[in-house]
Length: 343
Image 1 (cartoon, rainbow, N blue to C red):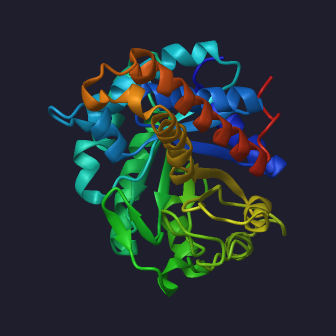
Image 2: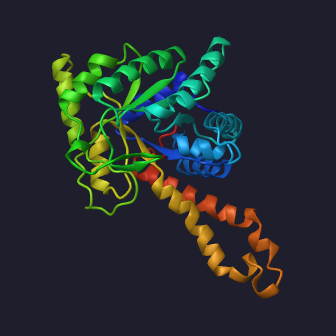
Image 3: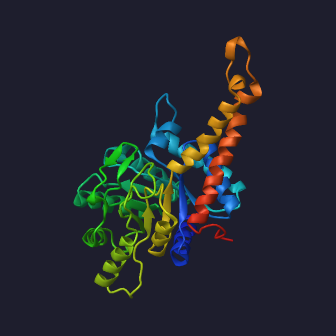
């Protein structure tokens, strides 16, 4: 099945919320990591989300000029072709974009999709993320309003991060402290600015102690039950039935999370979970193993000629793809999306 249409993407998110599962959102930086993500989804019989960060897009643009838009567009176009060969539905998303990179990344990509939609085609990406967590909430939401209006017109879903996620992601960093917890007041202000769908659909990256990067279980205090409080606060204020889940939440900084923390997040409305650190390691680990096991073949040691079959990028590349795909399959199991693909 091809890349999701806007209608199918909406259906995917609705199914996830109703079924209390979430889609792994896998960061990719190359055609090979894209194939690893697609392969993992297919093997798990799970639909999913493939995403490109600003740093990933810059890398994809090539080190000669490091153009983020070129890199993102090129891989997205490639994905539209190769995804046809995988029996799952995949949405394309751009990850964290701070204020200083909007004009060089998200806004030009929105323009690409606007032109496509005007021509009667579907948007190139199905969703974009605006990361205003480094700004005041007022400035964050003001920019989000502008982006949401453009995204809606282009049949794109906007993801917003209203409060900080700890650690560092592509140059945006926040301390690990009490500011990492979104309040009901923050949620109310978000709805006042962005609505509850009538102004355009959005995904909400609320903070419940999340931290980007690598950490062991117990080193970060996650409170996924906070998401229930946010939903209940908004449902009560806007007269929605008890048990309603007004928000479509995104789980950032999930490396090292326990199974119980993930399950609680799913019960409380998380429909998308970003996965990058773990899949990076899963991709690189088999390459390192191959090099260590074939040291004198990969390198021309002591004047020898090495072994072309061991340093051929296809040899270790296949191992890397398999390793990352296996980690994607594992993520689909944790997030309950395995076996949930749209028939």
